[in-house]
Image 1 (cartoon, rainbow, N blue to C red):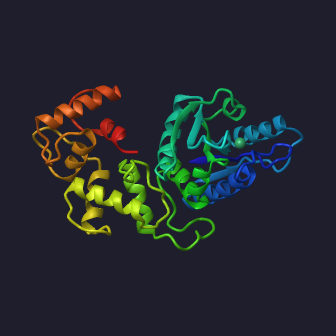
Image 2: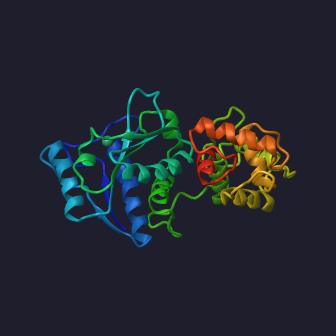
Image 3: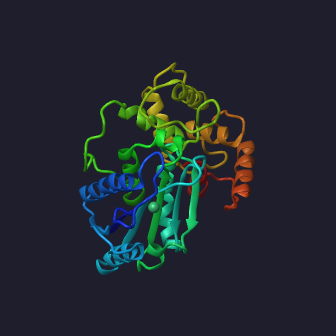
Length: 311
Ligand SMILES: [Zn+2]
């Protein structure tokens, strides 16, 4: 796959927003890592960012020309949002259905880090999206004038989420600078998994993915254990990882056939009695959920239903 990566702004007079941090610096840090990681995965990557421009329009034109002339398969522009200090979260702009399909997994990966999902939006007002010939997306990673987002923000995790969303994998090494030591990888994985399951802290908020086993992560883990029927106090155990793997395998669950921890998770999410046996009551709850989600109503938990249950 040939990616065109566009690091937003960084070409005066095209410079980015300034809030609690500078957009130029954030897009550069994340963009460089995204380029390094995609390259490490064996993809060819064109850096579409110009080093200079005579005007903002010239800057945008140079980005588009780089992508079109190199015939990249996918164009990705990286930006950070700014508004009123209160708005927060992640949004991705796309102008075609092909681009929307690319945008969705990227959004899901970023949101799993704890950012609010503002959705995939129509980007027909964005020059770099309407003038590139290939599917193109513009990622507003989060808000640089939001204290919530900036507390959560970590360059390495943001880059990894983008790469995982685009390529379906991340390199074993980092393909870039080493992350700061400190957070425990297993804890990061646990926090991301609980966020994907939409099991948050006691107030129902997503966990901050910081690799630290604090009271919020501990409460969410306790909740998960209760759902899947694991009686282990405190830290995650082998049984925890096994249950998570079983759920993320997204098995097809049919009435009168399925039992076990994936069933217990679905029952809990849908407000059905949690007994781990997929009977008529659970099937009815699945159907109600499918109706609400406007997807095929068959009472079976298949790919479409899993897509709506997991982030
Ligand atoms: Zn921008």
